[in-house]
Length: 344
Ligand code: ADP
Ligand code: NA
Image (cartoon, rainbow, N blue to C red):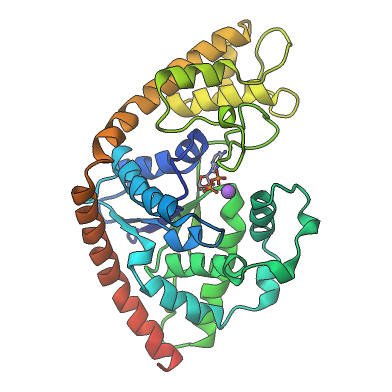
């Protein structure tokens, strides 16, 4: 089997919540543990993506540094993986421009994520209310930047959440268009594949019909990686469930209990139905206690590491610099080839 090139990114938009951790970041750590030695792992903090929505400059600057500390704290190893800030490798922006020039408006208009993001940023629920003429071009075209992030390293495997699958389809489409438009002996880009995350979507603790999200104004609805044991305990104790006796795994009719079971299964790396069986004749209080214990245990080490690392600005700056250099050197060959193909 040829070595895999794995690329994934996360926006520096605040301390990750349990959904980000179980749905994305923990997966990165597990990939690092299970990948073949030849596999290349590239993890990027994508600051340019964060700018597609308004950001307070001071908050962004802090979030950017915090996210690097988080990635190290959860166990990503800068020796094994390339960990870097997207905005410190200009090749992403250069390639995004070239790809923008071969991507039809119509394809971007079909993406639903910009509508959702815009609606979320305005606290509106109705996608149809989005006024396209007010849309920043950056938000509209950010799937192309995402394609560039991936293709700049000729990545073959991309772990993404469900909400991002259509972007990966677009990245494949753009790669294929480029390969066919600028044909030569061999295609420039491999078509990247999705690596599905085993974890189900983590739901809001307060409104289990929606996902746990950093954009919710209700702080009790999400658990942050940096929450204290007491905060975790009180948030889970306050999680919305139902009044039905006993526990069953029923995401449609009992989303609150299903969410707790999903969280527990993800923490212990078990099948959720197996977990559900153990709680068949137990109450929500019992389940909540066990979920609390599992989440406290899961976050204990990352939180401690983060607290240690976040003040070490010189160390973080050095790690960032090493990562950026590695990333730039890695994408330089690809960009040289791409420039040549398009005639620059
Ligand atoms: P948010 O929705 O809180 O703004 P992002 O969109 O920045 O989070 O997502 C970062 C990563 O975390 C993505 O890979 C996304 O799929 C994943 N993710 C976000 N929320 C959840 C969730 N509730 N459950 C599982 N994964 C999630
Ligand atoms: Na989101």
